[in-house]
Amino acid sequence: MKRLECEFEAEVLAAVLQCRWPDRIGTELHAHVSVCEICSDVVAIAGAIEGAREDTRAQAAIPDAGRVWWLAQMRAHREAVEAAGRPITAAQAIAFTCAIGLLGACFGATSSWFQSALHSVTSGSLLPSAFGVIATHGAVLLAMTALVFLVPAVLWLTVLRD
Amino acid sequence: MFPEMTFIDVRRDRILDDASAAFVMDEDAFRAFYERTARGLWAYLSRVTGDRQLADDLLQETFYRFLRAAATHDSEVHRRNSLYRIATNLARDARRRSLARVPFHVAGNDIEHVAGGNDAGSTERTADVTRALSNLKPRDRAMLWLAYAEGASHSEIASVLGLRVASLKPMLFRARRKLAKLLTREGDKP
Image 1 (cartoon, chains in turn brown, purple):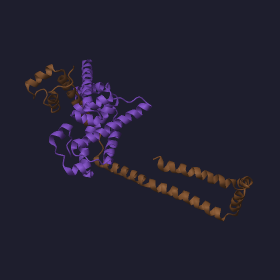
Image 2 (image 1 turned 90 degrees about the vertical axis):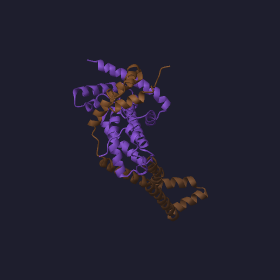
Image 3 (image 1 turned 90 degrees about the horizontal axis):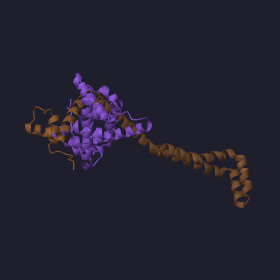
Image 4 (image 1 turned 135 degrees about the vertical axis):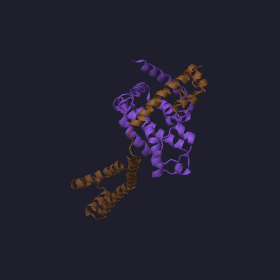
């Protein structure tokens, strides 16, 4: 079975990363690296990557910590406001639905044609009465039907989809 | 100014494990943590994604998510692992998104403009490493960078990349072998 690790690997890596390789290490470790495939790979890779790391870090244009902090605070604040606004939107939608329902109830209780239509329903002349209502108040009925479908759709779009 | 630290420095010194910094991330604590980690994290992101602009964006997003997570960390090592784990996930997501649209901008082009030291030899060596790394998978690049640029231990790399330590060892071995061969090939080029 092929070896995946070497017991000297960490020591060799530390020597390279701490710039002790190749001059400031013992001859035993030198001798080991020359015969160990794993450690010679570590020396080659760690040395190459260390150089690339220094170059990359030197060229990095890092934004100021204060700016990152401030932007993060602003974003967190905005998200918190949005999150807090969601129940309010939901409450507004529910209140709107209730208001529509209340208006409908008041309308039903006070409207003479609604009362007569209700009476004809209970007395068995439903179809002619229904056609009459649709013919005379079609627009109102259409608007109320649209509201029944629109309110849940608006509610879903504003609250639940987030 | 706060000195930059690698995983090795942190493990050795253990000077940042005070309770006040571990459980509360106020502005001063954040500034100190940022100064210690941002440059190294940017280098990691730019090497893993191969895109300097994307690394800029992901750096800010990483620190934002780190702050929002409001997680408590019992040591600087855990805090750093958590930060790198967020960065790794963001880089992975960005890669998936860009794969869905256009072929991912693999390391080697954009990042080559970043690379390069003051002397010609250093520039050439860095370009060799960049080209060699660009032939590896993003996960292999991340693994090797964490191991040999950041000095992270196997358990730390496994934690950052979401792997098991037992699985990591053969993967790291294969990635190292492949990079060593690629570097030899790059070095042999006239």
